[in-house]
Length: 454
Image 1 (spheres, rainbow, N blue to C red):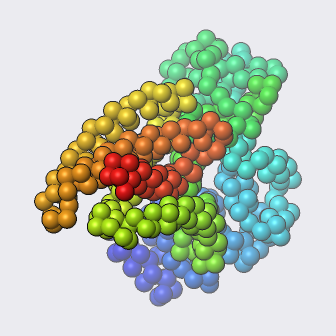
Image 2 (image 1 turned 45 degrees about the vertical axis):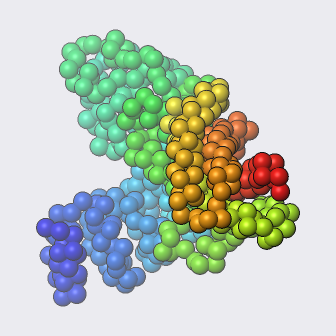
């Protein structure tokens, strides 16, 4: 059954006030699907449907709702309901939720939380934004060194239901220092008298609490982990980060890179729910920078105004300007995109800059030769009697050199940006295109005046 049919059925049950059937129908759906259905409801219906959900389900659904709806619910429900809701959420979900709320609502939520949980949440909120500590959870399975399989299984059966994940077990010493990990399958298959230290993996991949979340995501991707432990400066285990949070980080970082590559200031808000004024403010700064930098292109054209307006050759060169600028910009954008992707995946580092440049130069020679040859043939066949071999050659050679320059700039600028701790995405298409535009005109006009003697 498709989603449209499901939502139509749910809305019919809601409109006819058949709340018992609606509750049963919702229980047949995944928590993510229930949250998606709630997004279609207005404030009154949202509150009513949320309240008919079983308490153990409502907290899971709440974690998948968007911030606007969660804030709306918090403003409407009682203090008792708030306490129950927050206490039933996993710590990392509760922290993510509270980080997006106004201070007044955060204060109300914390006031109605369990004292111990409130202290834990406050501790998490003190970690810097986008750090490993801010996205970790404390709902994991840890055991002291020397614990037997029987003891571990007993504890796991008693507390595992409250853990976010039980697939990896973390072994610590008396000082809470992380000394190893063990997969659940080994625990299940081992004899009861076996000490878990005998089959734990001591070569543990971990991150620090203050590590950037992008570094965490890269580590998880590199080692294909389902979760990764978080330790403090003394290697004491303080939490773990699960793969579902890593996926959110990857999505967030990719979105931020796309926005920077399109000359936008990053925004955490959904597009349709963002005020047009905020969208405009996110776009204006980079547009101003690019507009002002583009004046260099205008200055170059102005300096050669006499050439462009007074001769037949000048008119031909003028008609070639858009082609030169667009081709150069496109070549630069291609090279920068591949360089940024390579760095994001850890395939390219700054030490590889000469290898990358050499590879792109070889590509540029082949691409430039093909484009220059086709451009020469186009000019000679379709530009009329005023076109000479000399002029067509000048334009084609300029095209070849522009491709070489654009490819070189496109692959190296992002790498230099990362070297000086700037986001490589800043050196993407708009900025590189602006640089290449000015340089392509300088190449065209310089060769024209030198070769044609104008």
